[in-house]
Image (cartoon, rainbow, N blue to C red; front, side):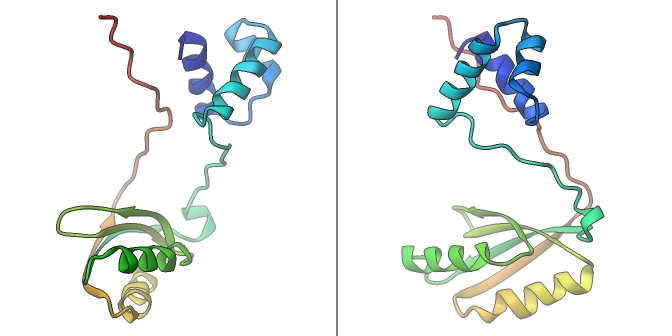
Length: 155
């Protein structure tokens, strides 16, 4: 990746809706160059789709939480089965399969604390493989909007 690729990644992460013409203008390069670079980054799997950012409060999901889950036995089939289950739950935004004391960390967004309580007690704990659940409410959340590769070591 060179400076142009990095600049393209930055602009597209800041606003995925930029047209090829807008990208070329901002980067002071030919439209054909921008188009080919974006296509190459997509073929290489560096760029994986375009997403719209949604304001969770405005869609009625203002309460966010992290839910740590421990399963027993922690084997492949149990973990794969639980992963498939939580990926179907509309409250779940992200699923992290982890090492350490907890097997999963779920980032969820719900309507209120009653919904959170119901999600944990009625949805999660219906699974027999769960031996422990810890819930932490998120007071605020910031997310890095632009992620770039580390600079190459010139040596």
